[in-house]
Length: 294
Figure 1: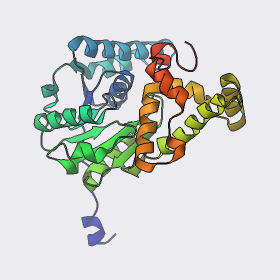
Figure 2: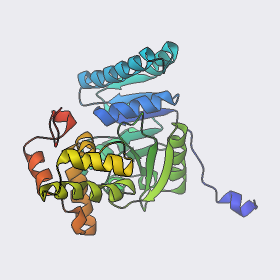
Figure 3: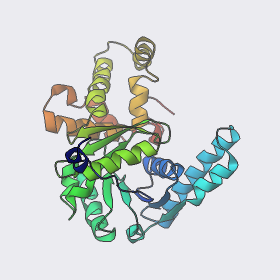
């Protein structure tokens, strides 16, 4: 390698302390993933009670793994010892990386990033776990657009191997290299993608899910038979309706709306049944009912 080649190599910065904003299913999963990698993790929720509840879920999940012989008790204790919860964003002051995982609403996320920018040190990277929203808009809500990127984990984060690292136009090479290294060090398969709606996975996945709903609406086959066909015919671990319910129908609708807004493709126009179920509060597993009942 020439000296010129060496000079252009990005710098990977050390990530020792990670902040997680959001205490939902994904937020709790991110806490576990980051703590398992040996890092100190701070979970911030809107109240101390909800932060504690999210950590309790992590604790319960790790306890089940111990019971099944998949994790040693002392390793569980070490993981939990690296986790703390708070209701104050100011507690992120010494974080090297903060990952936002709040509701998929661009204005709410912008507000979070604007506050984070005033709290963390100048070296810190701010990342979003958004599944489809434009990362560059979040970057421009801060005074450090070069140190903002997407780090998109999939649900459930402790189990799913893939992470999409999203590069907005504003991100530096050092930021992307550090994000890729962080994801890899968490035991994930990291891929880099430019900042376009849906990134890689959702841009390919959601036309399939949406068309499955339309097929059912047209009376081609039942929900159960469509799920069975895609599992058996394509060797998928679950059918499209079971997956929609797992993702959350509200989240699925938000992703399709964002894809349709950016690309204008009819395949991204959300099926009528999806819109109606979201309006009725039938959101999938998390509400007890979606396309299936739980």
